[in-house]
Amino acid sequence: MTSPSTAPSINMAENKLEAIRYRDGQLSIINQLKLPLVTEYDAISSVQDGWDAIREMRVRGAPAIAIVAALSLAVELHKRTFASAGDAAAFIKTSLDHLRTSRPTAVNLFEAANKLEALSAKLAAQEGATAQQVVAGTLAKIEGMMAADIADNRAIGKHGAEAILAKTGKDKVRILTHCNTGSLATAQYGTALGVIRCLHELGSLDHAFCTETRPYNQGARLTAYELVTEKIPSTLVADSMVSVLMKEKDISAVVVGADRVVANGDTANKIGTYQIAIAAKHHGVPFYVAAPITSVDLDLPDGSHIVIEERKGDELTHIFGKRLAAPGINTWNPAFDVTPASLITGIVTERGVVKKPDGAPEFDMHAFVQET
Ligand code: MRU
Image (cartoon, rainbow, N blue to C red; front, side, top):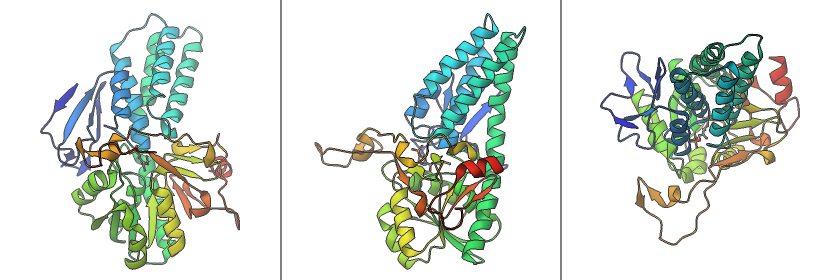
């Protein structure tokens, strides 16, 4: 159900963009398909509503997808009653199985679903467990996810800002980012955009550049909106301008987000990330990935195993429902690409920055996760 709203998306008191609103079992999200021209909150009243919002990209961005999926389950858990602990756990499992089918590439959704499924099964298996205990334990876990994500993003911002300043040796830096990794893609603050926010807060950001990010235009519509709203000095460029931007505009570093970082550091992120990394290598510009540990998938050895979502051609041929491509043309629309570890300078997480072992072409994400 859509509830057109005149409520501003910015909480003016705190100057925070509230893309996901959740209070006492009630969930609504900003419909990101309409931003920045229209701010409209959609109510999410069921797991199916959550699934639809994710699939249609009314909410998008790896952490936000996981949070909205989990909160759509929380909404149902608040409303339902169950005959037994086993029934409650079975409902949670079925719901999570469905939510897992919404979008394939961002691992955060699967990580959250696996944790919630294991927790509810464990609670149900306890001697004398009741349905209320299973529901209460699962709700507590889900409702803690937003706060945890915000804290992680703040830490990522700090680690990323420090790493970029140390690497470049500059007092003020000029940063290029791609796609949207800010408050609209996370619970708040953002990952790569969190690094830019932190540099700005420190007085160390000279300028931010964001790419348009065709075909869905997350950069032009969403990142530009966040940057302008927060008065961060920034400039929009088309995706095709990245190489000349690096040649002529003194870019200090690139920082992007991630949908999945696998064991060797190969990283799936928004389509176009790979070509930016190649351009960065050519121009000697450090290239950072900023992502929480929930985006790390240690089960996959390298990027060739990542499932890349392909979306409908309409996103290429149309903008805001208006056709711009010649009718009859074929389309290919992979939503993500994989940047090989060899092109990545460092992976910024809430636990610190992962660096390659001396002389190694790849990262050892297993070692980092175990040691931190
Ligand atoms: O298709 P999207 O908009 O969900 O893709 C988003 C991205 O690729 C982001 O860079 C990534 O999810 C990181 S968001 C903190």
